Amino acid sequence: MVKFICTFAVLCLIASACARQPAPVANQAAPSGPTRQAASPQIKVTSTAFKDGELIPRQYTCLGINISPPLEWTPTPAAKSLAIICNDPDAPGGAFTHWLVYNLPPATMGFIENMPPEPKVGGGGMQGKNDFGDVGYGGPCPPKGMHHYLFKVYALDAELPLKPGATKDELLQAMEGHILSQGQVIGRYSR
Image 1 (spheres, one colour):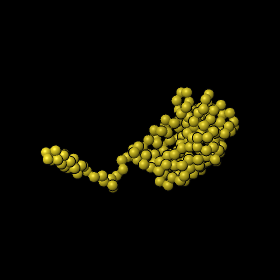
Image 2 (spheres, helix red, strand yellow):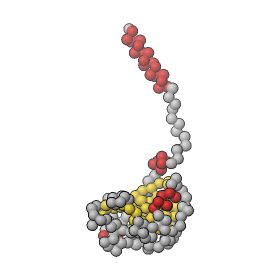
Image 3 (cartoon, one colour):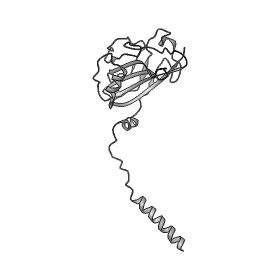
């Protein structure tokens, strides 16, 4: 009988403690920052030149004619501008930037291949300086081994206060706190 009373008392204490826990509130405002980004819908990015995870055709590399590949992405209705960063995280000295495009009009949903290496993009937007030291696209040119090339598209809640020819660090700093959603397509290449 004493065991039964002790067990009953412990169960009552546990039930009482659980009952005092505040219930989650469904209509609380979402926290800002990275959590907001993680909950945002992703942008689907594709290329007609290669599928996600497949080899990038030679014509889009330094061993070919070194033109930018075609890209497409899903609509971004809440965006005020778009940005694109292409980099190689497998580069020997750390991530190597191959292409920066920013302040694209939010209605833009892709590029045809061979975007001219001009500071200003036809139809709106600007190109930054890649790690080759040039404005515009610089294709894969790995020293050895298989490398991955991430073509990331960002939907932003503002137009960025940048001029043509910005660096990746300048672009990332300007984008901080303005990313609504993002997506990527990954291509691979080896010499």
